[in-house]
Every structure is written in C-alpha cells, then in structure tokens.
View 1 (tube, rainbow, N blue to C red):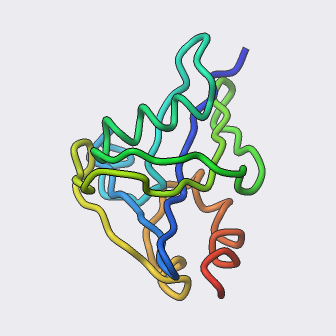
View 2 (tube, rainbow, N blue to C red):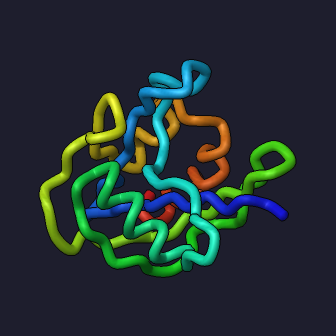
Length: 128
C-alpha cells in the first residue's frame, strides 16, 4: 500500500507560498509546496494542518484538491490541496527559506521534481 504525502498550496492574492528544502541532501535547496506524510489512521486534511503547523507555525483551512496525484517511486503518492491561512505567523521551522511568488516566477524556481506537475494548475490559480 502506498504512503500518501500531502502538500499545501497557500495562495494569498496573486502570490503562492513556496518553501526551500533543507534535506535530504539530494533535494536541499530545491523549492516545494510544504507538507508531509499522512500518519496511519489520519485524515489527509488533518495531516496537512498538522504538518503546516509544525513546518511553518501557522494554522490553515484545507480546501479543494489541486491537480492530480503525483507518484514518487513505488511507494509514495503526493497530493496537493489549496489551503487558506487561518492564524499564526509564517516561520521556516523546517525549511531554509520561505518565499511568496507570482505566476510569472513559478517556472524560474528550481522545484522539487514531483511538484513541477502542479505548475500549470498553480499558474492558473494565480491568474496567469
């Protein structure tokens, strides 16, 4: 059975929050939508709320799915959701940096390979 990994697309106005990875070494420095693994018995939305609280120090409300599932290797399935900032101040607890980007900046970032699948949908959501 595959492990589900959830990612949050936090959009504010015409900008998207992206996070720069610290680890593992092969992904360090690359940009991603923040998130993490769903624990056994945990709902995907609950996992995303927990992960973004741990990684960014904020509470979010999870909205609709974004794009299609992205398989990573044989055992992981990456799923993205739109999220809305509800409370707290953003801080990169688990990342090198956080950045707000516009639609025209999406393709210039050095993305984690799996997250590139969502770029067309993200650009559309940002009004490109």
